[in-house]
Image 1 (cartoon, rainbow, N blue to C red):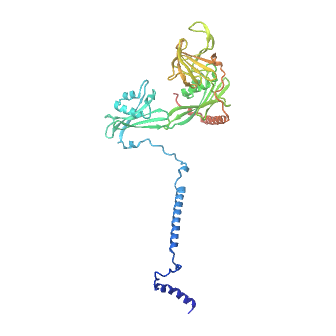
Image 2: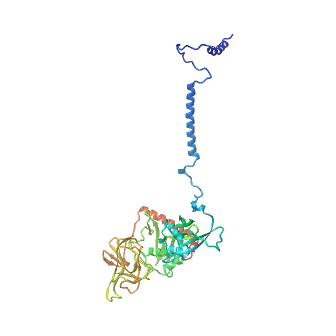
Image 3: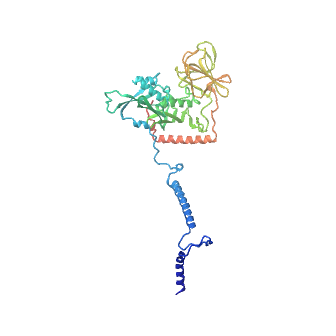
Length: 483
C-alpha cells in the first residue's frame, strides 16, 4: 500500500481511538494543550472576532450619522437663500380660529378736535361697558391719548350667521387704526367683553420723485405746483435759508430742482412723506446744490459738492413765510415815540406762526416782560445768544435749561408786550453785544473727513442716477394730487 494512503488512514483513525481512550485520573498530570483540529476556530479567536465586529459596527454607525447630518440634512448655519421670500407671520391669532363665523361690517369714524377715543366710541353708539373693555385692551400696546385730530378709526359690527344684518342690531366687534405710518393696531372681540389685540408693523416702500419748476411768483408756489407736500417745501426753504434771503433774493425766472421720496404701504397708498435727497436752486445766475448725507451715528446733514456743510451755527430767519418789517439799527419806536437802537429784526407773520430755534443750544430764559411780552432766550456755542420776543404762547414742554436743536419749534408768533401787530422780534447777541443777524458770517456746522467725503460722493452719484432715471420717464411720478 502506498505511503500516502497509509498516512491518510492514520489521520482518520487517530480521533476515533482518542474517543475510546479512558479519562485520565485526578492525580494524573494535565496533558499539554493540543492545537485545534483543522477546520475549527478556537474560543479566543471567536471572542476576538466578535470584538472586531462590534467595533466595526460602531464605527460604521458613527460614519453613517456623520454623512447624514453633513450631506443630507440642511445646515442652519449654511442655509441657502430661496428664490421665494419667507412667508409673513399670520395676522390671525390661534384663538381667533375658534370663534364662530359671523357677519361683519365696518364703518369709518374720524377723531375730532378736542375729542377723545372714548368720546368717539360713545358718539358711534358703542355700549360704555364694551367700549371700556376695548380701551383697557388697547392700553396694553398704545396710549389713546396720543391720537391727534383727524385720526381715522375703522369700527366693526358683527351678527350671527342666521341673523339679518339689515333688520337686526349687531354687537360691537372691535376696531383697527393706524396711529403711526409704520404701525397698525387691530382690536377684535373674542367673547363677552373680551378683546384680543395685534400690534402690526406696516412695511413701507420708498418711491422717488423730482420737482423741476420755474419760479414765477414764489419758491413755495413753484414747489407746490410740482407736487411737493407742504412739509417738504418748508424743509427745503429752511435748507436754502442759510444762504439765501427769500424776501429779497428770489427773482422771477429762477429755477428749482428737488429729488425727494415718499413712502407707500402694501396697498399702494401714500403713508407718509419721505426726505429730500437733493435740492438745487438757480438764483440770479448762481446755482446752489445741496446733497443729503446720513452719518454713521444716525444724524443727517446737507453738503455741497466740495463737502462743506450747508447748515450754519444759526439760522438767519427763524420763522417761515414772514415779511421783514423792521431792520437792525437806529429807529423811532412806534409806541414809545423816541429814537433808539433796534437790537434785532422784526418779521411780520400771522398769529400762531411757528417760531424755530435758530441753532442748537440751551434754553436760558422762558419769561415775560413789559417790553418784550412773552420771550425765549437761547444760549449757543462760541458766545452766541438768540432772543425771540412778542410770542403768543410758548411751545409745550419748553423749560429753562432744556436742550433744543436747530429748527425745533420753541413758540408761536404773537403781539404780546409793546407791539402794534403780530410779529417776531429776533435778536442775536455775541458775548452780550447785539449784532445784525443778516450780516452774520458763521462757519459751517460740520466738516467731513476722508471717509465722509467718500460717502458723500457715493450719495451724490446715487442721487444723480435717480434724477436721470426719472427725467428719462418724463417725470410722470410727480402727478400726485396736491395735498
